[in-house]
Image 1 (cartoon, rainbow, N blue to C red):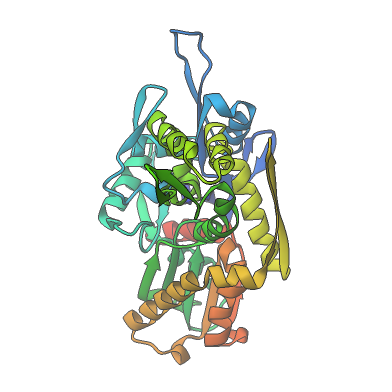
Image 2: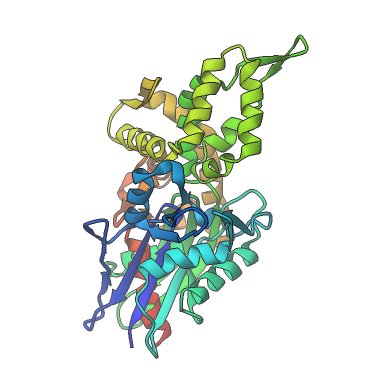
Length: 418
C-alpha cells in the first residue's frame, strides 16, 4: 500500500509519497528534458495530422510549454484550470473542434503527474478553503475536483484543506502543544487555518477555524499588467463612433491581463470587435499591438516577464519589466512602493481574511503561538508585513514554499489510514 499527497495548484502542482520510514518524499518527473518535483499546471493541445485527418495531441507541464513555444500559432495553451472548478458558468471548451469538459481537461494533466493506482493505495488531494472566483460554488468545486481524479484513474480519494497540509509538515518540528495560524498562498487562492497541534505520544490535530479568499499571486501579476502593460495596449484611450468619443472597452484588458482568459480571446468575434475599434481609435497602433499579442499567443512570455519582475520586487526596491515582440517593446522601471500601492486593496482583503479565521476560532492575536506561511506569495514583503506587524516577527516563520502542502497531505493520509 502506498500513500500519496497531491497538491494540484493553479500555477504549480506537486505529488508526494510516504517512504517506508514514514517520511514524505516528493515524486520527481522526467519532463522536458529535466528532472522536476514541481510541475507547472498547464496543458497544451496541437494537431499534427494532415489536412482533413486531424490527429489531436497534448502535453502537460514543461512539455506543454515547450510544445506551445515551438508553434504558438497552431497550438492551444491552457493555464489556471483549477480557477474554473467552482464556476458554474464554465463547463468546458472546444479544442480543435473537439469538446472537453473541465473535469476531462484536469484529468489529462493529472494523468501526467500521478502514479498508476494499485489496490490499497491511498491518495489525499488538497483543496482550498474557498475556491477562486467571486461567485464560487465550493461544493461544485470539490465535486469537480473529485470527478477529475476519478477520470484520471483514482475513483476514490480523500480531500483535506491545503493549509492543513502545510501545517502538518510544520507541526513535525514542534516540541510542545501550539496553536498555529497557517497561511497557504497559491497562485489563485490564499487560505488560512487556525490549528491546535499536540506533538508527541498524545499527538493530535484540532482545527479551530479557517477562511479563504480567491486572491493570491496571480492577482498581483494582474496588477502589474493592469498598470504597466495594458496602457501600452490602449487601455484608458478612446475611439470615435459617428463623431462621439467612447472609451476603448475595458473588458479587453481585464481578460488580457489574466493568463487563463487570454486564450479565450482568440476567437473570430473578439478579434473582429477589436479590429473595428482599432480603425476608429485615437491610438490605433496600441490596439494593433494588442491584436498581435492575442493572435500570436504571447501570453506565456508575458507571464514569465511579469512574474519575474514581481519576484525581483520581493528582493529589491525596484525592478525593470522588459518584453519585446516585433514593434511592441516594454522597458519599464517599477518601484516596489508603486507595486505595493497597486496591491494595497488586495493586501487589505487578505488581512480581512486572516481576521475571519481568528473570529471563527474564537481567538485573539495573543492566542496564536506560531504563524507558518507557505507558497511563493508569502515571499512578497507587503504580505509578510501583515503577519510580522500583527503577531511579531519572532512568531512568524515559513518554508517549503512549493512542496509543504503535498508533503503534509501524504502525512494526513497515513494518519487517516491508521
